[in-house]
Length: 375
Image 1: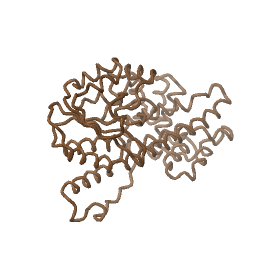
Image 2: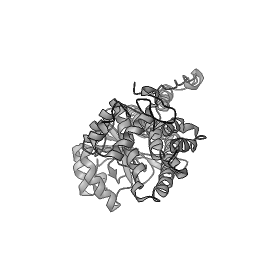
Image 3: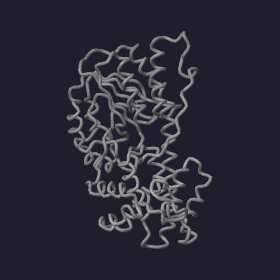
Image 4: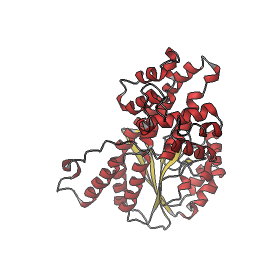
């Protein structure tokens, strides 16, 4: 099997999930939705769930999108956008026009994801727009109008814009659109505003976590680049191996958390060479001995010079006894180092996992991903 065993998560306690009997039906539903969001705490997942529940609070028959300040993309690119809006995104990004990006959609085409937009959320207060998407079109350059048209935004008759703020910090906004001019009353506006206030702390926590993850990546990359700069031929090697490893890991079916750990393993895999070539895999693994949340990355670094036939080092592991991340890293490393698919294929079943070699060849033959859409 490709996948490594996962530690089962303990079920949430009944006390944490059951609200008091005095809660209203609306509050009960809000608590249920929040519990669902906490069970799958991703930035996009929370926003998509928030849009869905906000729509239900308004009686349904709405579409919506969420905009945030947060930069998108797992590997430093704009993975959240649809393939059709890449060029327009680049133009706007270079021009510095847009301050937000679409981070989640509800009822709209996924091509809208990742689109940089300026819009009617700058006032930081809940607003009802009775002139449809006119303000949205006026605030954005013509390069983006085609995307908005594709999503049917010229048909919008009324919009509710609800800011999402956490302790005075603006995180973005929920925008709910209706094609009819049916009014959204004050009470309904207050319900959605309260809902946005409820999810804001969770979004703030997730955003802070992403900022720390980005910082950790940047520091790791800088340290490795400083080390590689001592030898010109090695400069950029770890970055290339990390990119190939993540691509292969994604093909295997690893999830984002696992891909993060694989990225660190690949980026740091040769850092042990700071003490010399001999035993560098063990030396590199020792750098992570106290970083407990990178335990699998540590194993990958230690064992990335094992061989499928059991003739590697340091422990002469063979076959699937070699940790999965280490097998992925070994194939990605060989792919970058050898460059030639035929030479890589010659190592299948000898030094390298043959199934992973086949997958590496397959994903390498694919055209560069322009942008992945929401799953």
